[in-house]
Image (cartoon, rainbow, N blue to C red; front, top):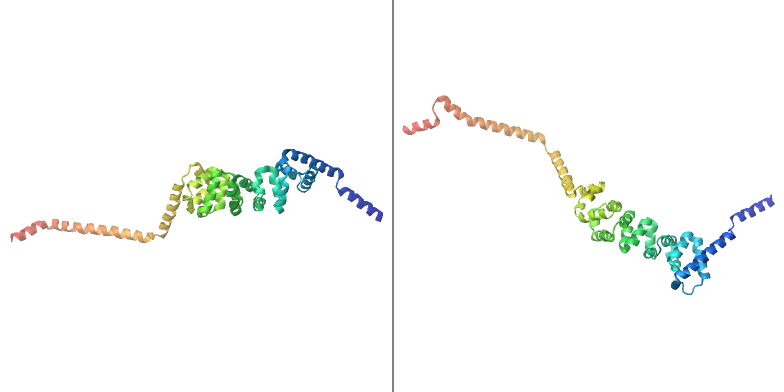
Length: 291
């Protein structure tokens, strides 16, 4: 039994032991990449030998896999320092360098920006690469909706979003994550509309109408001013109607009608009396003067 267990342990060890061929394969790949990096990034290599670079590349390869190789290939020897300085976000820095190369430089050199990328994903990274300093605080405050909005707009509209935030107008409009989500969906057209109508959108009813169905407003088939007028007048009219005592008003109208009828009756009475006696009122007054 002991012999069998020993043989089983040896077999398991052999199965799970690193393959020498596999290890040699990684070393060969690392050396090949080191030679490529030496030729492409000659000035950055300085006095490092191919062997030194190979060992560094192999370490990155073992830890980060193919993304590690792509990062080194795209960025060169600088990638080693960037990965080291990224600390706990080393994996995130490798992913961005592998995918975007030097374009990711502004993001990967900051742990705070890497943290934003780690939390909100590719949209956040692409927004920060596209718009730089405008993007990080907005994404940090409003999350994924800001990342999507910034990714889909031009530099001018990214600055407009930042300006609205700085002046407090974005907060005055309200429902900011929902508003940014609409901008993320419709891009520059939506932001152009928001910029032109930022005052009108502070009216809650107008904002609600826009957020519930933004496309007609963006395309120009619906008018925001008309919507504001309708949504404001209708509730007022309804409230007036609700508070009105219609019974009292009806009784007042009946009383007025009766009063008018009575007045008309008494105006006609003197004429009827004069006709019945055959002596007009004017003639009687004349006779009195004659006496």
